[in-house]
Image (cartoon, each protein chain N blue to C red):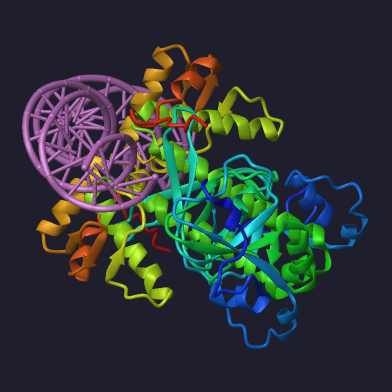
Length: 252
Length: 252
DNA sequence: CGAATCTTTGAACTGAGTCAATTAAAGTGG
DNA sequence: CCACTTTAATTGACTCAGTTCAAAGATTCG
């Protein structure tokens, strides 16, 4: 909203996108969706560091990430930023606010990014008329739910390097899905953001990166991380928490 | 396990429920939903300890909890059970599996419980024909997403008692919504389940309960917990993680 | 009543948080 | 374009809370 400099448009890219685009970005087959060609939504561009939604704001629209990276977070009373997720192409922002019409989490761009603006009224009408769009939303919610599970899994690990290894592997997997090189990670977020997501101090993130690098599993250069030894990382990501009384499959 | 042959029905309660029931259980206004009287779904009864869905199983239906308590969890390769949530009345199970048609998480009853079985085909048809049901699903997903955020918040806390305090307060709040006495908690889950959800060892849960009890904030008797001093608990739940460089509100 | 699970408590060890100080990078403005 | 400021990242030292291992009660259930 308002004119934050380049605001709406940007040269070389459309100011609006169609329903077919939405399907494509969220990784759904879009062939037989000719009807969705006539549905369109505005595209909003964000510069690095620009907030898209603030916590607690009335939910006026959902957003589907078209490009870039956003961080999704809550700010505690004491000012601590709890990062919930990083949003990449295809992710839908604002779903966690549908139930009470307020944004439960804030979202800020970590690099130049663009999103489709799904104004609530129109979007809900669109989902009613186009089951594929309803499906898109359900799918997005489902994916996010599953990803939250993975995040929980991360934080459940005892050792900080284990959490970090899991995080890196998950990011790699997501990049692969988006057809980026899966073992060349360009971290768009600060160490502190990662630390928050993993539930450790940012110093621990630093140290853990060092440890994994020393072990030859990754190579770290500023915010560029190469996954050198993926097998090793996979091995490292085991061990959630000691559970000596683990597998008790009853013997028929 | 054991007598799975009682399966569907149980004396004294209907074998099916209507769309209006679904709305009611999930806390949505159900007055003007006369059309939903004709939509009905089977009810399934579960005994304590009975699994409802297993991890990885093909998603054949969603479930809406009608009564009781379920635990939602994943079992790691090493046999560790990572608890994701506890489901109470109104919660929908299986949403995290919609995106790939497999159950991402398992669900097991912690006490005698009942759920509405929303067989996928029929349910999806129903949501298409009845926007209120579509809304119910979106709302359920949204609520669960928001609740996952709270869980993240819990695990981000440094001290174990803080995590526990938050957990107890959240459970209390949910009970209040369901019109149960908010400061008389009957924990349906084991200490270990709680520990898993909070990301600590079960010994720590035991100790933390002791600490909070010693401080006079709660009273513990086996699995009955009374919230004696709610203010105190609220005070205890602060302090996520030191962040001396916290509030940086830019002043324009 | 006995077997299994759950829960509590104890003791020792260790990994991660906190505090602190230094270096590196990025952003700002003249 | 370069000083200057601010923020990000790394590294070290110290301390302590929580994990781990162990073992003893308590409760449940067959």
